Amino acid sequence: MKLRLSSPILWIVMGISLLALQSCGKRTEVITMFYSYDAPKVYFTYQQGVNRNFLSPTQQELTIYTGKFKIPMDSILRLINVPKGEIETATLTKFTMVMTDPKDSTFDWVSYAHIVGSVDSTFASPFNLTSADNINLINKTIDFLPNRNYSPITSILSNNSYYLRFLLTPSSPIPTSPMKMYLTYEVNLVIRPLP
Image (cartoon, rainbow, N blue to C red; front, side, top):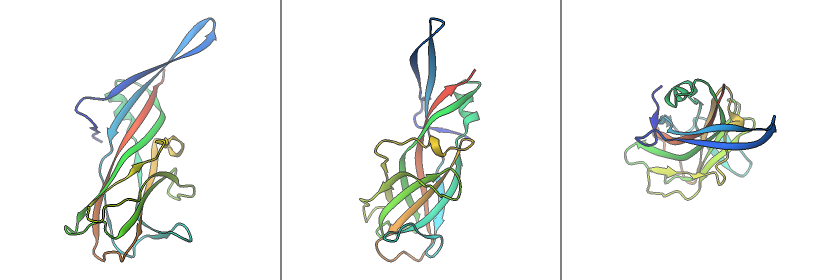
């Protein structure tokens, strides 16, 4: 997998935390590295009547896409020249959903958009990632609000993989034509090198 960096220059910030551990009178240094990249675009098609989900008695949400995603740790470790490492924290931000087809379609039928994560495909305990409730009705793009505290998804990582589900709440009749869309977002990692 080829990684697209969020800037032309590899953005790696070395974070050094000094822990006052008085083991044998020596101070121990814990080094972590911050790495950010743009996740590959997620393309999908939604058509009315497919994958309809009711998440609560008062709110109807359409599941328009569910997928499994993997953080390419081997590639990242090679890029930052670290032989071995583990993810200390992982955060997903800057979600944007774009409708590409039909050409004249917009999100004027959507009142609310929501993205959740999960450790597996059951979504038994969905993890709230981001939402959008102020949608421009003439726009073909939804810019999601980041979770207020940028909550890490570390708790839903399994073998560096996670699941995402994209949901929309309709406010008017859903277009009958298949709608092609894609979603972009950014992955921010704090990586701890291992000996």
